[in-house]
Image (tube, rainbow, N blue to C red; front, top):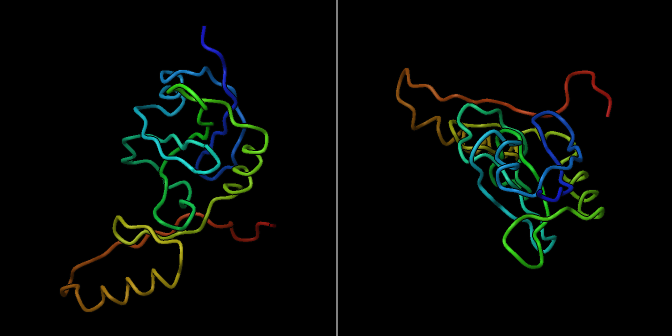
Length: 152
């Protein structure tokens, strides 16, 4: 029987929540609902596990460094010292990443590109102004941020 690992699950619009799942690829894929892709945060030795196919999934969080975004639910787990599986997060890693992803970021998508800095969005939109033909459209979609009247 597979040993459980302590991870964080980060769902769109929700704060990260701790969970324990079996330490297997099958359990990770079942939790995410499909094949996975892997990213990592170094030197913290933390893996970001997200769905490989994110078509139709809601944007979730802006990547740290404000370069791109993650769509759909993702998981955070540890990188083992040895072996090629997954590992539990330490309590320090859990705290650090709960703080990092505590609330959904505010970002905008221009076409299929995402931006977390309003100045970057403005530059892109102004740049598009002269390139769009008469009647041509571009979709701007805003995601995340606080709801009107929500307390911080």
